[in-house]
Image (cartoon, rainbow, N blue to C red; front, side, top):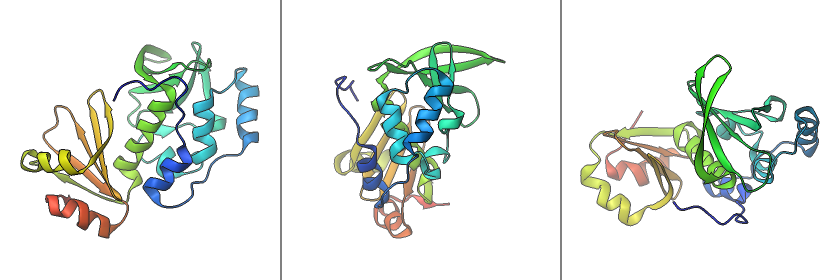
Length: 209
């Protein structure tokens, strides 16, 4: 997935509704204003839009990785820290200026982070994370496919590729997602409903767990 133009804006409400078929629950403007006063810097527009759209949705905020709510946002080393990897191996942050890349801070030791660019704009990275949270915990019905090679041509031909970032690829069809990690010999499938799992993933021989 190539970089989007700097002025490309993700509609997080629309994206959430597309995945979950309901209106998301976001945080209040006042919570973000309080966070900005505490941090001493402005929250960039994409991160603000993300929280306003779905910042009170556990399926987005805590299904796999852990997003910080407005009260938990931190400002360190010139970056607003907004999400923690599920095993605590890294955090994600962004500089407060508009149009900046998302960055990942690898945890080297206590209070020591090594920062690298994710090489995508913050708005695009938040969309990637929303899909990831949905595919890895947000959707209730999930399973693995241990031998994906026979069905990969069908997936590539009839599923929409919605994420292609570094070693992660996510495909979407209806109310189901399939995720693949480079170097892993299996696929993970998830669906919003049991019917969707049977319809879209059962035919590919995914086994629901």
